[in-house]
Length: 37
Length: 462
Figure 1: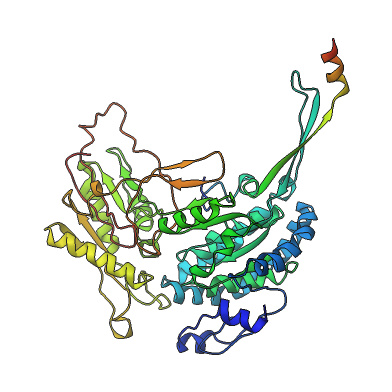
Figure 2: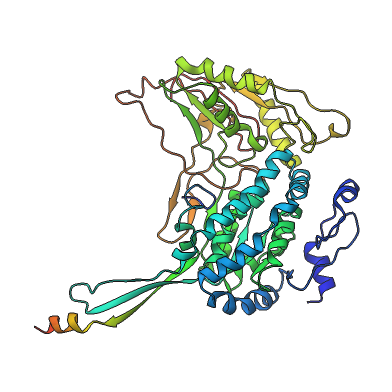
């Protein structure tokens, strides 16, 4: 998909091309407890 | 930097008296026909030689506020900014036609596409900032919340051939994502793009949308500034190489759209009717052939060769060469003298070699006699050794790295300012069951990456 091509102009990919992704992880008590067993 | 110096140093573009007389009224922020025109406080025109001015004044100051808005809020502001843009479209198109050379209708579409793409982007407002929460993965007892954020400052550098439409493929998306943008119109076609961007920028918060014009050699800050997070470039291969090298120092993201040389391919069972021939004709000769993804070569199964050649010839017989603004003109001049010289040289070489060169339409006279108008041509079956032969050029291939970089891996000839952007065409598809030997009647197009010299050939092997 090119900058000026089809798809880019209509899809969310056109927006994502100008974004960074960030991720924040929060401890999940249930998952943590499950790991303890 | 003082406003007067900024205006003089960066934006001045003097055009002929004729344009001034016709379109000189109105506020453009440019200098036309020797008459200065003021800019306002919102549209910051920066000195590209001073990174601090460009990014520090306009971009950095605007970034926090714009980025802090929700995508829906930004979309609302952008919808308001684009409202009424069509009111100036006729004049935008007329100016673009004069700058570029292409016919008025194409210029009008160029401007229209900008608005269409802008509004298409706004439809993504709800999705743009949407976060998602992932379930804990086995052995990783956390719940990740994934979200998106703007990159920062984005430079968008557009080419001469379809500057405003191509701008529309990046600018609204970058803005909606929360970035601030600096637009750099082509040095030889700055007026219409600047007019459109200016009208939109005036309605957005100060510094969110900026436009800078001037010679390329003064534009290094748009690429090298540490505050610029991404550079979108559509243009020549040589320009793309330079920009990628310049951006490397700061590891700035650089998606490149460069020259292309894809062939149009007709398989033995292809539908070759008026509808498809019309589309092929447009795909070769629109904008006088000066589009990266125009078909410069046409490969046709031998048994279908005459249909394609005759179909193109019939359409070229109706071509009217002339001034882009004149009623009835279907093909304007090439954009710059260098492109004309290249095409003429290529055609001359092909003729000298005894190839079947078929030229169409009549060159205009009068004050257009010294312009860049060139007769469109088809060449059938050029010698493999000629530059116009399909064998003398390689179809472009591209690769994308995991980042947003995209670059050209193998070369096809380009000329300065022509054939911008890249298109990665589909691989040649052989008819199921057919061997290379059966697929041997190719017709080829020109290796002209510019313009109208679509050269068709007929050869015995591919």
